[in-house]
Length: 93
Length: 331
Image 1 (cartoon, each protein chain N blue to C red):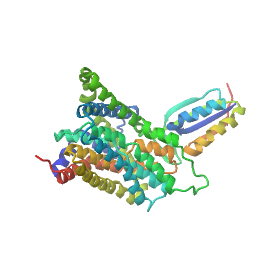
Image 2: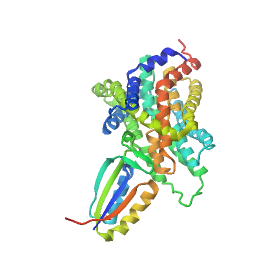
Image 3: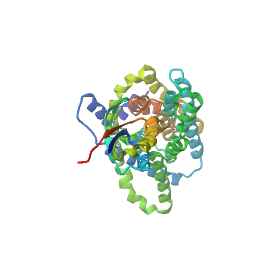
Image 4: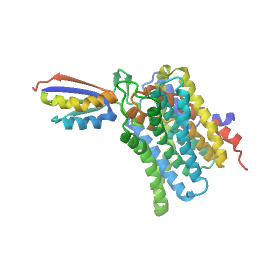
């Protein structure tokens, strides 16, 4: 089992979720209004009124064979809009 | 410039609350407005101003100055990005120059709403069709900005990003602020024409809460603008100067067009404010999506950290003075 953590702008959340679904991942969790600091400086939710919003943190647990499709769907979005994704081993309790 | 106009504007509740927000950040207060509230108030302001504009448009109709004024407003939103771009291209790459140029071609609804409040305190009338001009000036600058990127920024990088025109057009014409503003305008128009009895039921929401909501929203805008001040170091003196000089230049062009159109002083001020303001909602969202190469901290900080405060504090009374000078009232 793999764990994928994605951090991206809330504006691109719908597109990323579509890619996760299309890759056949069994599910995902979304944390909105994520603030902090990235390569382009501070990320805050103070521009939420403008529709720019803060970041979202998406967590996906999936079998290893889903990863190539997930990468294929998500990498172009991250390349175009920015954002990061990390993969780690996961083990059920 | 008439100093009493500046003083009256400075001492109006929305501007004073704006200052309070700025001071809160500068003194390190923990004053913070939870993110969903400013969003709610910004949607409310767009709904209320659109509805009110629709009611007034139904009464004034589409004759007289309405269509020429709207056409002139759209022409300005197409033209301002072009000459802004030519100036900015002297110092910046095509991506940043186009994104900033589009920002200054589009408008700030909150500056427009603040100008309406200023006119109400001055007891100067204005017409509902100016809201239609406001709505129609949001989108053209986005399209021009993107065309400028396409023309002036050849695919010179190996990883140059392909533009997504379908998404861009949807973002330009169907973004939430344009949709809500135009939708509320049409609803106001329909209600005034076919259900006048329900107008009175809407007024406690759309009019009596309006000034308080604007003041509260400007408190948040003061906080956000002050937080953007530190980003201005990255922008540098040229862009900070541009953020003030370009609105002033656009206001002069706007006054001359208002004179040519024969607008009344109230409508002329609103037209000038539309020409002189810069977008920090529709354009940044569209540019971030379609020109990711441009640096958002530049165009957002300029519009929000310099031009917006300048316009609501000094600009509106200054533009009123220009209007009074070039378009003296017949009375």
